[in-house]
Image 1: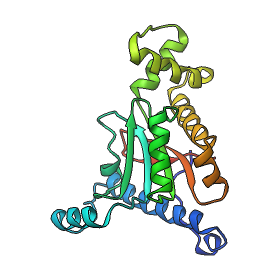
Image 2 (image 1 turned 30 degrees about the horizontal axis):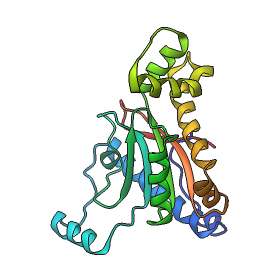
Image 3 (image 1 turned 180 degrees about the vertical axis):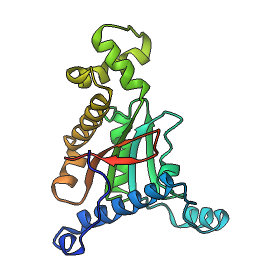
Image 4 (image 1 turned 90 degrees about the horizontal axis):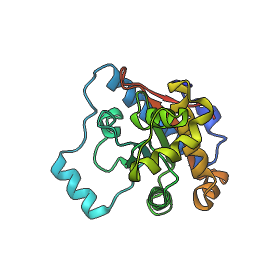
Length: 213
């Protein structure tokens, strides 16, 4: 896994504008996450009343779409020191992206709100991935909607089911690939108007690691 890195202005100058924006957004996210890890106070924003009124009047323009798990220990707004209007957050068990509702939400954010960065963020100690690996090993059977959901995740992590960390990363990469194969997100990514990345949040340390492509 790749950790936080500094951005070279000379290097980003040669990138298309969408990619440059995404790089800058990512740097800000990781800097805010580093402050969270160190227990530093969140950055100051306008008063909640003023900010709410501004967003209600002028609309939203979130810098990042975050697809992450519904786990109560994972809160992107807190992890990244974000405020109202900063993040477009989509959450479900196991941070999957194959569902139509997830892909539709992402498409709305990147086409209508012009968010330049999409982050698929898994996390350590993920119950959904742990259940999927147990199902893949034949150690568990889960019924109902949850069972169908877990079986879908299990298909993607089956090959690495013995290692939790790798299974979590593989599940994230599956999510990224699913988005990149979609007609809307894929086209924007190919034209460098949009960046789609995978990441893993360590619930013990509070640190977010961006995965290598």
